[in-house]
Length: 438
Image 1 (cartoon, rainbow, N blue to C red):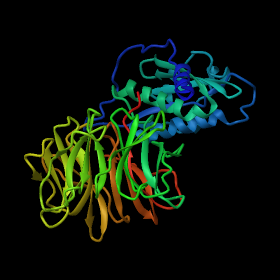
Image 2 (tube, rainbow, N blue to C red):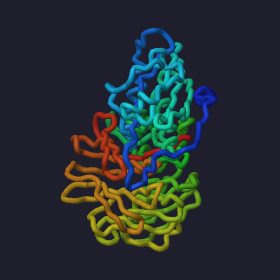
Image 3 (cartoon, rainbow, N blue to C red):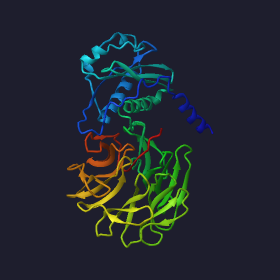
Image 4 (tube, rainbow, N blue to C red):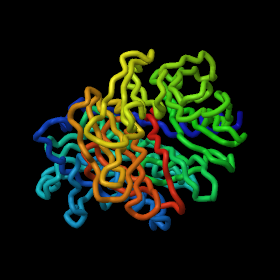
């Protein structure tokens, strides 16, 4: 009860203020062939509290905000040295007197500014977005939370900025689950999309593999050898309770949540050969989907839940196949690559990401669900594996050995904007990107 109450109180105090959109206008068509990055200026937020910002809060807000905007790939940040010292800046950003003409002269078409007030461990942040080109206030938000929540607050505001410009939510308030052996055993961790706030969520002191987020991000399914056999567990992230839902003799591996959050596609070897099955979230209502001498693993649902991609060696080599959710109409998807693995289906469009062996190393590829438009996204950079789409379909998280150990990276869907996330000791693998949490 106490944990639930604390969880509720946090979101209660992290409230939205009375500011509303001045008008509903989509500025950026991110799918347009002529898309160009939008020039935006960001000021350091003013301190409405004590005269000296001893904790560097303004710097932290600025760094998180500008990093989010850069990662989006949609904005061209105006060089900070060009930022103007304006009357409103001298008053800690507390006024709305914006000299739109002067900001326009340095090339800015939008402006983000704001202020904060810190009282002990409680912080209040007010952030505003302005349209410099049209001379309008676009939207503003006020957040109240704990000092440690600054990054999350700014991630949420950046999502609002992205929505104002594109009409789509971003991924700045999402998380990435992964397996790490940093402490000697494989355990599951989660971290923010930018690599911060890593948290260990299992303590099985055994082999733990294949985390998979539920549709609403409240639970993670995974495989663990905690009791000797590879069994499937579900962990409730709010209560920290775990339940073992599949423990047939042999393999119980690679769980994948269905889009409705009620079922999981899994690989079981209870009948001898590893095959794809569907079970409900309690481990009941078992239905076998594949029946072949080949090994069938790594299921991934289509966004509408009507199809499932999976890996099979029924053709002699591991390739990606697609079937309907009842196990019928099986067809091979990959032909131009060798030894493919780890398919993941984009929630935004009919596109599948996977890894495939090429010239002795694994690389990341994407392909349409009809088998056309194959694209190679990585090359000449060690082994690149375990790809996972972001919920908006604009980014891919994956692991790479380009810096010796297997580490987590993100890139845009076209392979650009490569960024390594927080560096850990040991190896990280089995990536799963969460859905949006709001």
